[in-house]
Structure formats: structure tokens, C-alpha cells
Length: 111
Image 1 (cartoon, helix red, strand yellow):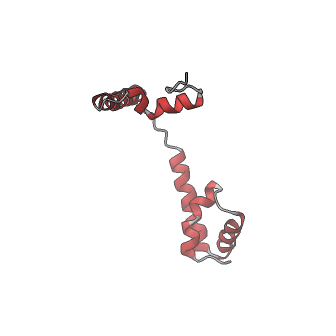
Image 2: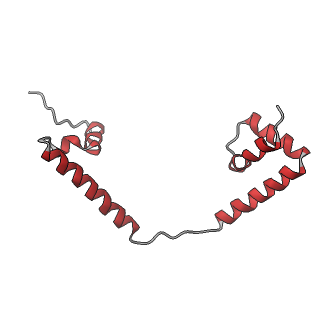
Image 3: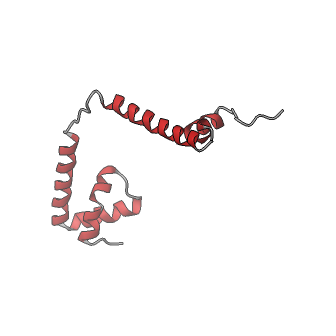
């Protein structure tokens, strides 16, 4: 199966990340052997990836705390909404239900 330049260029990033199937990789490489323009495009793609790899972003130290505070506020508002509706907040929080399920706890006890 031969690729057009457009199809090949659309798969260059996937080629660099090793995300193509064997057949797709073979088709791209076959096209690259015959097409200088696409080989040049692959070179530019490699340069772009190297430039991205060279950029290190340092998140603010406070980011984790802020995210936890936002999550805590959201969970509290969900619990408040459930209480206002007359339902147990604990029973409505999906995380609590998940933890209960994986730890074999249940709110509904027999006996």
C-alpha cells in the first residue's frame, strides 16, 4: 500500500512516537525513501519534537494545593446539594461508593 504525501505527513508524529502499526510504518518509510519533500518534513517534525522536549515547564508550587482546595470545595458542594435533597451526602459521592466497593464496605447491611 503506497501513501500520498498528505497521508505520510499526517503520520509523521505517530512515526516518531512509535505509534504506527507495522504495515503503516512500512508504508510511511517506503514513501519517505522515494520522496525528498516528505523526508524534509520528517526532519522538521523531528526538530519540532526536540524543541518541545527542550522546554521545561515548572508549575507553580501552589498548584497542587489550589487543585486540592478546588476539589474539596466541589465535593463539599455536591454533599450540600445531596443533604438539601434529603439524601445522604456519603451515598451520593461516587468516590465514596468506589472506595466502598473496592474495600468491600457497604452502607446497606443485612441483619
